[in-house]
Length: 353
Ligand code: KG4
Ligand code: ZN
Image (spheres, rainbow, N blue to C red):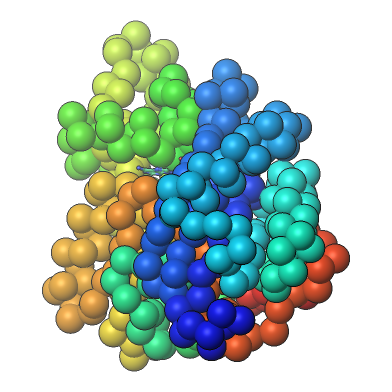
């Protein structure tokens, strides 16, 4: 039960860990509003997110984003039961903008604050789309900074890492390969679009950590720096030979390598754990080929797969509000009003006190 006596708490979620300033309101599992202001265009010419530019953009956008989300939800500030904010992991200067704003709201409204884990929030967002999360579930978390397989017994309290990337995150690999191909930042959506015109089996790029010895030692781990280097070498060899680089074929073949490994290892983790529910989250879960291949393979193995719509895979406030509402509903402890931000918050720590 909430302070207002309702079983479905109204929670505002604030997300500023990277380049999206995002605010959303939920009532329990119902999404009331979702507003995202991105500074991605300000970073594009640098080919990656510039921390100082991101922090400044959050400061400039947050007040308006909060106001727009509240208005879209048709609520008064006094209607809300709790404030949830991403406390980590992410860029520390960027995180602090959201955390400070959330502290201000909590103080002014005299409501509890929950500093939440961005990675757990990428999983928790699916509650808003497909209903309460199945327990236990395996989660494949694929974003710009993280790639891991998790066993989720309770997204508000009990998340166990099964494996993770040993080098680049999947999204980072998309961004770096896009840069090699001269495609705009962020690379994921650019490669996804170009790959549609290409042949995914035209170039046989390596599948990281899938060969016998490696695969045994690193059963649930990933590595994407090898495929990135292979793409770079392939392009250089092609340029030296004077032949044109077939952009769409390189994009499609690279994407196929990443998608093949992610989907195969995710399905296998479910089978190893004896779990028949897979949740996919994070920006790379917006990838059209990953969505199609995972759904196809999961179906073939009798695994139920949940992937939120693309707009809820890339960073947003709904994910933070969703995890916040789950924390309130399950009576989890709140954070202190003076909670810090932790740029390297581990995935096992779902809230920061
Ligand atoms: O979760 P997210 O929005 O931010 C982080 O928490 O990192 O993920 C951003 C990453 C970027 O690397 C971006 O290129 C990738 O997600 N991404 C995609 C697609 N849309 C975004 N990767 C592949 N295909 C997409 N359609
Ligand atoms: Zn993210």
